[in-house]
Structure formats: structure tokens, C-alpha cells
Length: 433
Image 1: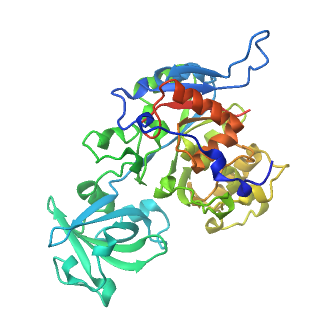
Image 2 (image 1 turned 30 degrees about the horizontal axis):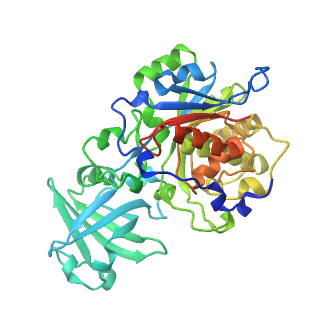
Image 3 (image 1 turned 45 degrees about the vertical axis):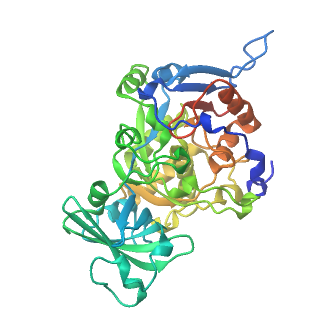
């Protein structure tokens, strides 16, 4: 297997007709279709062609999972990351909040800032927001020089001001301030912002999206996109999982706009993977350790990336027990550079727990830039629950890492059998063998 940096993204393309994209969710979350890919019993059927694909719906997912396995969910919460500011002339400036400025230790602490915060943003209509133009301000300019001019928005008793601080390579650093200053930035977004639906839905946010573009267990503000595999789960599904002795635990990965970032490079070595914040508790890692040999099932690609990142973080603590938290970040190609043969997932998780105990850390909070592509050897997970993804995306590379070139058969089957694609669409369980 060649190094994944040498892969060509054109090899992970397929034709996705517009009508196959689910622009709205089904009325009931757990009625979405569920495709199961499992080659484990390939030799069990003799005399007949083996078909590794079977079908069900999410309401019955407990029937498709082994008892005693652990389901891992991403409990991040989508924030209303789109803010619309109006110029005095009536023109709109849209700010899309991507992630906090680098000097914040994590997204949660930045979300809890009161009165003022700095955030990296995309700016819609940036050309209208000319440096030095007072037309963008409905209040007196603040700060020094051209970067100090601002636009303002108010509503529901809230007044928000945004100032351009710096132009970055692919976004802007914006300083927000607001009154009443006692509100947190998370509360400001809830009051003034819109849910950022994926661009491929090609429609405006509607009232129902505020509920349906969140999982029922969403807890921690910070994502600009939902962990969509979890959108299908209901309390009824959770009850069935409990009856079958399939426990669950939660991790947090705050999904960035990079999840929609197209791969523009012909070869993966020229594509920079987006880094995202992860947050995992000591108790969750204990649960992972208890189930790592029984089977761990990631619900969503974000959960999978977090779980597999934990292995490499644990490996760092084995190699350097005194490692600082700042050095725990997982870089893009790290898992392919020096693949260990002597350390199991159990050993890695044990070492990570010991490191946390020594450092009196209740949570691991760091960033991961891991890219999972063909050639990756899975350390933690046994299966992935996931939706159907865009052509030529890093998510499709991840799918191929699990099922190889069979991703083409799976996607062709789904297209031919009226499966609904992307965020509000149907899903699958893919077993690692």
C-alpha cells in the first residue's frame, strides 16, 4: 500500500445527481435507511454468491450491532455561526464564525467569553467592507487605523459590533463586542445568529433546522456543522441499544468548516487537513479501555477521528511520559510516518490514563489534524456508523480506508436503491475486517 499522501483525489470520484441529495430530513429521525457492509461471514455461506450488503433502518440498528460493544457519540452542538450585519445603505455583510483566535486554549472557554471575543471568520461581501470606509459603521469608528472600522447589528435588545483585526490567508480575524456585556458569546450567537446549513443543501435555514440539524444529545457549543451520523438516533433507539447491552459514551470534536473544504489538490500530499478541537473525559477513556477488545463502534467520522487520535496521543505518552499537554496534538501524516508494531490500543489507552492521573487532568483537550485514508491501520474502532459523503472528499478517503475499493460497490448500490445522500440523508454501518 502506497503512502496516502501519494493518492490522487480523482480516484475517489462518483456521479452524485442533485436529486439524490436529501435537502430535508425525514419526518422521523430513526426511519432513515441503514445499509450494512460486513464481510466477516463471507465464508459462512457455501454454494451461493456472498453479498456483504444487507439493509435495515436506524430504528432497528440494535439488531445489527454485537452485544457488549460500545457506541461512541460526538456530543458537540452546532452553533448559530452565521451573523448578518446591515450597512446603512442596506447592503449585507455576513460573518461566518469558524473558530476562536489562537490564543484561546479551547472552543468552550472562547464560547464563554463575555463582552468581547476574537474569532476567525469568513466574510461574505468582504469587498463591500472596505478598510477605511466609515459607511460600514452605524456607530463611531473604534481603534486605530483602517482595521478599526466596524459594522454593527442589533436586535432583541442585543447590540453586536464587529471589527476587522487582521486579514489571514483564508479568513479574517474579527473582534466582536456586544451589549449587554454580561452575555456569553454562545448566548450572543443563539440570539443573533443562524444555523449554518451545509452549502450543498442550497437553501436558506428554516425554523425546523434549529432542531433537526442537532443530535438529540448535543451538549457542548462549538461546531459549525452537525455530526450527521448521530441525527438518526432517538430515545427509542437508545432504549433498544440498552436492552441489548450495548452501552454508549460521549466524546467531543467541534466540527470546523474544513469538513466542507473541497480537496483542490490533485494529489493528497498538497492538501492540508483542517485541525479541530477534541475534548475527551477520563471516564470516557476508561470506558474505551474496558471495551477496546470487545468492540468499539464510532458514530460518525468525527467520533472515529477522535478515537483513532486517542491512540496516537496515548502513544506519545508512552514514548515521553513527561510530555506537555501542548505537545499532544496529532498532525496530519503522523500515523503514517512511524507506525508502531509493539503497542496495542490497550497499552496506549492505559498509558494515556496514567498520564492524566499524573497531571491531574480530568479531560484531554487538544487538536487533531489526522487524515484517515487507504493505508491507515485502525487501532481503536471495529465499525463506523456514517452517512453517504461527497465525491472527492477526505470523508470518502476515510470510507475507503475501511472498505477499500468496495466503497464504489456500496455507493453504487445506494444510488441504485433510492438512498438519500449527505447530511440529511440515509446512512450505513461499515465493519472493519
